[in-house]
Length: 115
Image 1: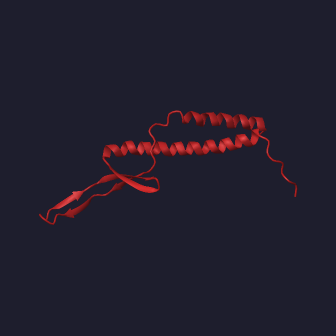
Image 2: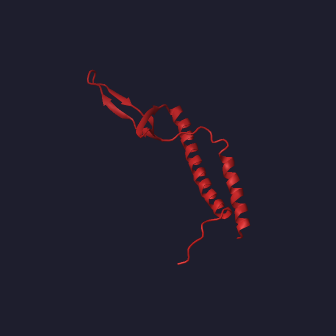
Image 3: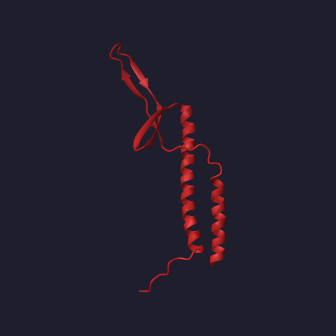
């Protein structure tokens, strides 16, 4: 493949990836965990009470792990935002790779030494 043809193909792919960035939707980092139901016996009444299931969103903030409990409705919305974040990160990684390849084809590099 000629350099001009390859460059044209790379630029078209770059434009398609940039278009994906136009509306990423809501974006969050982190993970959602399901905390399974557990039973606890009350010391006062001796009754068994069931806790859960419930959902936890965990992420890092300023080097510390933060955990927030979520409702079932929140879980779905937060999962979509986390999926959007992962797609955005994948798109950015592809853009970085394409940018490097385009720059390699369009800029003059340092001459290589003969050994």
